[in-house]
Image (tube, rainbow, N blue to C red; front, top):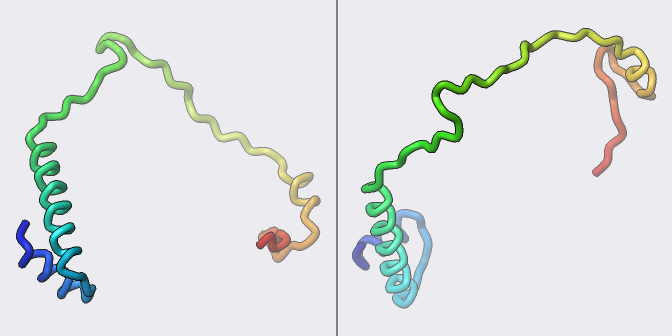
Length: 89
């Protein structure tokens, strides 16, 4: 990353930066881009926590219809099917 690149970025973003800041940002952004290039070179491998022959038993989802009348009765204000609550902010 060059000073001209930083100056162009600041112009595009309409941010005024001093010569000292341009020097700082040039170094910082160069370091960041070097790190990104380094990370892109790694091959990430997903870790396995269980063996392939181990099967996880999952429960079946069941729809349970519950009577909510007791809960609905606790609301002091309703608008049709909507339940209004007090403003807390």
